[in-house]
Amino acid sequence: MTNPNLDEQNKQLFAHLLVSLAQSALLGLGKIVHPATQKTEVDLDAAQQAIDLIDMLAAKTKGNLDGDEERMLSNTLSMLKLNYVETRNAKPSAAPQAPAADAPAAADPNPIIAPSSDDKTSPDDDKVRFRKSYG
Image (cartoon, rainbow, N blue to C red):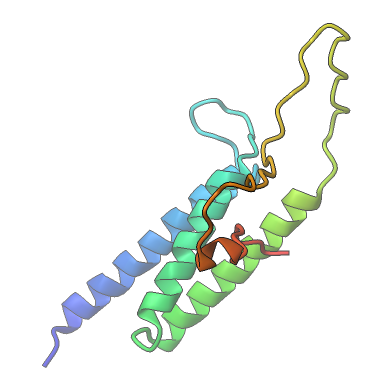
């Protein structure tokens, strides 16, 4: 027989963990003010990591949550993914400055590197590797 006090405590701890991860995601999405800088800053990689953690939590706890916990988890995840897509697709508030004529060109953050003809390839090399996208 399970202890009702322990069950209630675990329910509260689960909710606290979920809220903490959601708050981290919202912070990365620039939806809440950063407590240290008192500014909103967008960091999509940090937001995506927090959302991925919640996604993993949903997968690992599937079938082990009560109705309220399941609804809280799915609603939080849906809200965060929608906000992620909205933030990613938003136009920047200020126009980016053009680089000076003598400034070196910025490196491509996602360069495409083609294998040389003398590289030994394995069957796994043909697999497409990608980052998770919510939109």
